[in-house]
Image 1 (cartoon, rainbow, N blue to C red):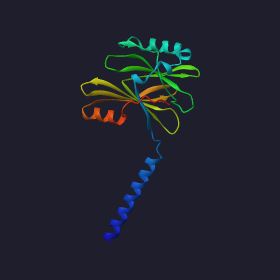
Image 2: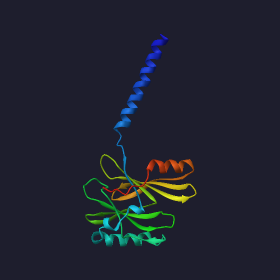
Image 3: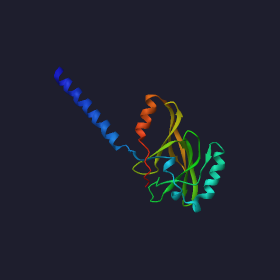
Length: 183
């Protein structure tokens, strides 16, 4: 009798574990498609004739917060899977490598939001808009990790975490090294 109860308990626990795994497997997975930093943005990728006015307006919104104003280069990525690139443009950057990045669409030209960071990770779900994770260096093994997702017609911050020591290293390790390949 005890052996039967034990087997029933093991079977029940196994079924619960497999049910959990199938639920997890069905969840939309994000795969890291690209991680980039300022050095990956190039003037050749920036469609100036299409985005100049939208970028100038975004610079006014941001104000003068950085050491250098750029707004003349971009990283092109298809953030919504429609076959057309959106552009992530460094608007202003500080001395520590952190930049304020504007996200822009081109048909029509529009500002889709702003993120800040030294390193940006773009992850693509199975459908819909990409998720962005930004990492800002705060110095001495400390940083700020922020998660942005499209809500309505703009990217908005959903999470913010101060990280330090081993957590800082874990966040950077999870993001991976920047690569300047664009899609």
